Length: 149
Image (cartoon, rainbow, N blue to C red; front, side, top):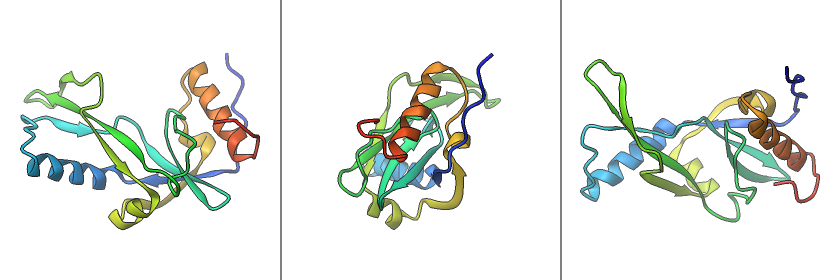
C-alpha cells in the first residue's frame, strides 16, 4: 500500500473546458471539419497554478510543460468520442483530434478560468507511481526547487 501523499499548500485554479470545447466546435464548423456526430473531450481536468506571478497549465495527471502561459502559448488536446444510441462509448480517439492553443490573457478573455480552486494534492489524481512522480515534480517546482519541471 502506498504512503499517503504529502499535502500541498499550492492552489490550482480550474479551467472550464466546456467553454473551450464550444470554441473548438465553432472552429470545426467554420473550417468544414465534420464531427460526424461525435463528442469532444479534454480527457482530464485542467487547471492553472501560479508561481511568482507566472501562470502554468497542468492537467489532473500532473502533466504540464513548466513554461509560463505568460511567456509562451500552451495547449489542451481534444479527443473525439462516438456514443451509441444509449450513450455508451463505442469508439474514441487514441491521439488528439485537435489541440486548442492559448496563453494566459486568452484564457482570461475567453472567460474559462473558474473561481474554483483546489489544492495541488487534491487536483492531481491518485492513481499510480507515474502520477505520484508527476505530483512530486510539480510540488518541488512550485516550492522553488530548481529544474523540477
